[in-house]
Image (cartoon, rainbow, N blue to C red; front, side, top):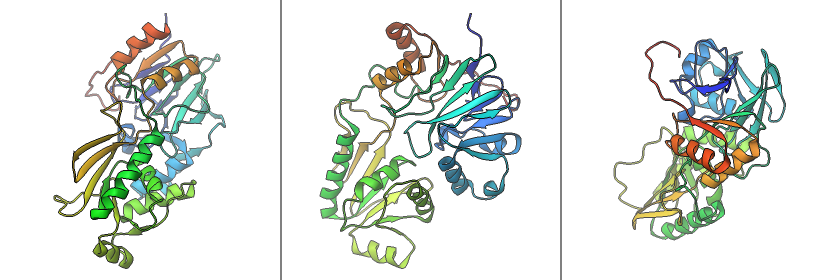
Length: 342
């Protein structure tokens, strides 16, 4: 009989023992761990602000402040933790390890009374230098299907992106749309193109500045509303980036559109061409299926709950963990509730 130390609430909040939840809100828990700042992990954050202590890495804390502004900078309940430094919270001992999914992303390990160790993978890249060591694990299932095996490396995907943008710039500006994290990675890759400046919104510029503070060598970018930015746009020799809250033009009459996606559809080729003027490049910071299996092996977990609220392959993944690794694995049960705070 497995003691129910871990689980996932209907709201998407990850339960790690009696004191801690991750990436969600529950009225009975006073501590929320925020693994990173992607939208599907930000459930009920506004509720958490008023009712919970929120722990994260320093990079995630700064991105949260940049995103929500207002009172976050001054709140006593938004607390940053260092990687690999355990922190006692109530009766639990918490430790964050790098997940390499985006800046500030973390795996979460919690040691409970009696020495039982539980954890949440968060979204993670593979390979990792260090994996949480746990008895019970809540596991991301984004690439939980056996069909989700990439036959190209991320270095190859980055090289393809650089090649495509260099070619398309000969015919006009390139417009690039993506989510936070993937976008900054694309900017870092394209910094190699020295003769074509990058143009960004104020909101994106603020985010990029945080990335620079944490070691990302992103340069040669200008605010779209600045005098330099306006001159650059008039020249047609530029790369325009669109992040969260930035709207692509309804119609791009001149130039090429590139979407950077964290998800891949073709397992052999990271590039999907829609036309001569539009394509998608898969720059993903998720482990593929084989990487997920390797992660579980490395964690030492004997009981796994696969996340059925994010990703979509929790059932497949739990079955494969049982069949291939002989691990007791179950998908989380998705149940809706109209009760407040559960």
